[in-house]
Length: 309
Length: 288
Image (cartoon, rainbow over all chains, first blue to last red; front, side):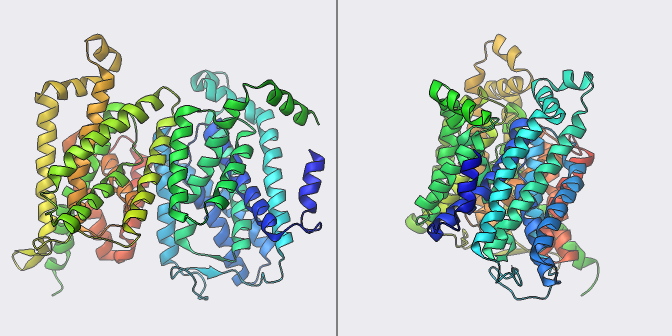
């Protein structure tokens, strides 16, 4: 496993085509976000549809930061902090809701933010895109390799973070809550606090990944940022791979990135297919690819071998 | 003319607009009330009907209201099929499965309409939808009045249907206690199919009147879903009258928001109201 990470990290040096760096970059960004969505929806029972809010807020924080003269990496970390704070803030209304109410409550959040960022012009900068976007200032000297490494660290980091969380008391508590919320609560598990922790952690990491994405893109504008398509991508990656499994988002993200580049020419059809794939997977194999693979002995021994390394 | 007349215009507009919002929300409310399913694709299904009517109007020269003759059976069948082959199965899988499938359907509709009719905004413009009528000195679009009338008609029809017919009573019973309904010999799976189908009929009517009132795009569905959900949240679940009142409140909130804060901020006010009501009274203002 370490070998694989080192090889991936050396990609920019051994002269792989630029396209590969781009695939890798997208893969790691999506992987981090999908892992965090899996943590919420799969392990905590919080079907959050407001992930675009976190990544968008982080992206905006970084962008505005570069306009007032902060270096981009300060903005990146600050953005994650803002996303976490925002998660804390919206947890006040949305944590009173459960299950499907929670999903709808969170769906409204990015929509509201999109309008706010249309109306609010924090810096009188250069307009770009749909009339309310900003260029990210002073990142001309940041190379693709550096951005790729940032994405790599966050992507791989999210895998370790998931392992860490799921094996900690937090993860044990979540498992107990998922099996039987009432029984867990009466055995002394602080359900509310556990869910809040996962919500805030997921917001921060999603924010980091979002920041790196916008670093690569170079500009940010509200309608593509606070867009349900982000939610769609994360949902698809997690569900295709296998929701509530640790390796699911990893496998699912590979499929999503491959699909993305295969179908890039047919933009509309790509999302049409993704919708159809989502429905089909959910009906035919609710546990996704992992659900199918787990039937084979080779796969089981392979995962054991990898995790023992 | 600054005076009472100025603020009266948005108030009456919002009041009338409430009929349209209630129309959009009836289907969502019914599906939620009976099956405990939030149909994330509801807004997109409403917009889909607007596009059907647009196609009927441009290709066949059919009046939007007349095209209901086609749209209602089509949506009834579509609703039955969605429930029977997709949602019905999803219920057995897990809690989040129906939600994810609804999300998938929503994306399929959004992108299919985009491919068929391009992302440009369209409208169902007829000779009468652009006319206006007067109350005193104030002028209002005729389409708003039509929305309001259609809202009342659908509300009364749904109420009568649910309380007087056998099927309606069966739907009510199944929503209260599924197991008991089954023991009484009600085929709840079929009832669920009819519920979804009837919800889609109300969505069909909503789509037609939406198209005559506002321009629509393939992605209008998300904001419609929020409006419908807000209406249901304000009005409380299960009661058709509550939904209607919820629609009127939301309509007035929106037009007053536009009046005081400018038209760009009107939807923001709606979203904030929805979040605030969710936070303080998740069962709705008129819910128990």
